[in-house]
Amino acid sequence: MRLTPKIYWDLLASLAGLLYTLAFAPFDIPYLALIALALLFASWQQATPLQALYRGFLFGLTAFGLGMSWVYISIHDFGGADVLSSGLLTVVFVAFWAMFPALAAYLSVKIRLINPRLSTIGIVPIVWVLIEYLRGYLILNGFPWLQVAYSQLDTPLAGYIPILGVYGTGFLVALSATLLLSIVQVKKHRGLMIVLLFSVWLTGAGLKTTNWTTAIGEPIRVSLIQGNVSQDQKWRPENLLITLNYYKTMTEAHWDSKVIVWPETAIPAYLSEVKDWFILPLSEAAKEHGSDIIVSLPLRGEATHERYNAVMTLGKDIATYKKIHLLPFGEYLPWQPVSGFILDSLGLVLGNFTPGAVDQALLKAGGYAFITSICYEDVFGSATVKNLTEAAYLVNVTNDGWFGHSIEPQQHLQMARMRALETGRYLLRATNTGVTAIVTPDGLVIKQAPVFVATVLTGEIIPMTGITPYARIGDAMVIVLLALWLGMLIYHRYALKK
Image 1 (cartoon, rainbow, N blue to C red):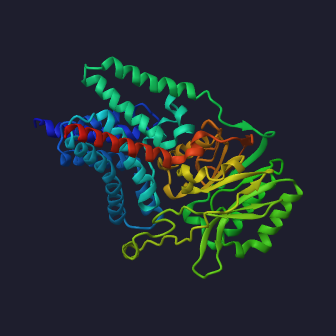
Image 2: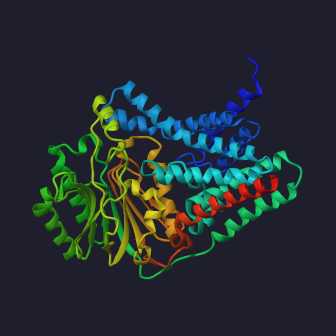
Image 3: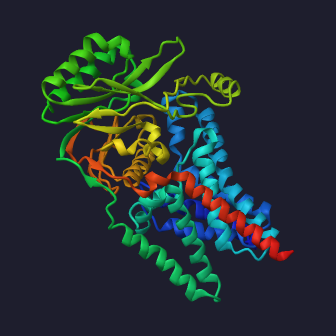
């Protein structure tokens, strides 16, 4: 069968989606992101808006189909749905998020057709990032998975992350892809575009040597406990004492650590059920040994319907943090009553938690306050930088056991590393099944536990102070400036045309 130009570009867009996902963990071939975006943008150049939309959708299907294949495992293996229902829900999930690169494609071509004098270099990178922001922050409480900047943690562009965050750095990746495409296709001004491309990357390399934060104390010895409790066994009542005894025993073996961290819902019972006979005695023991323990468990609120996913500090200070940014379809159900009806029909029972207050005080352990995030919260940079001036390090507790032996835990760690780099703080990441890790302020993993192994990861962190430029300006400033820039480009070209 002979390929027509249209089918050729359709296939190229699909291939670009495959290459794009390979840029992320656990494949970690970051420069494929540039090639993938360059191929995708090339497929839009001579397309109509609808053709571009279709190619953007094909790109999304392959990128998210591979990159988010773990959704099937969560629904089927741990959600209890049958193969057909699990496959159907996974397809719907992937297709929904594939609509966002499709929208970016449609708008890019549509804007170009309004005035052909507008340059691809000026339009596409801005539109791409604005749609990433729409997907990652505004829709369904935000789902920033596979945003392009996360693939660049180990490239020179990582130097921009403490300044511009995910979206500003993502713009530079998309800009680099359009420059690369233009260098290949266009002879006019080729030298200027080469200089611009190299300038962006060389500046990033230089910025990687900049230290935005400084130490404020001596190293702190820490221990992170990875219990490796199977998700299908975790909440069975007969396993409660076994689980609690394991964490207690491992904690007692590491009283030489100033901070001991347990993973998300390591205590599979409500606080009211274990407070008197387990929590308070454990807290007293920690205080006697000069240690602080960071545990995680669910809490009941004053109202009968209130349930919180929480973190609690034990030892010198007893305090709680209630998760603010809940996971859609995992911890709450959006689009009610439709979503509830569908899930009930499939026999899926999901959590129904209440978000915590946005103005909670920071928890303290090891003598310093820290920023707390529970699981999914660590994929939002804007949440991590709040109250950063008061915090000396970051703590994330996670349970990625829902996704089995998939690529999700490695992807999640990659996103968590971004938070350390954005804030210039050490990150302690304790997970149930992996990946448990200690991350430096420049986003490097210095210690990592093997996945699906019950173990304790011990190391040292340094309390830090200071504020990165990103922590000051956040995401909103970058998004507003890009939107204004795009608006001025369109208005200026439109005015010239008239």
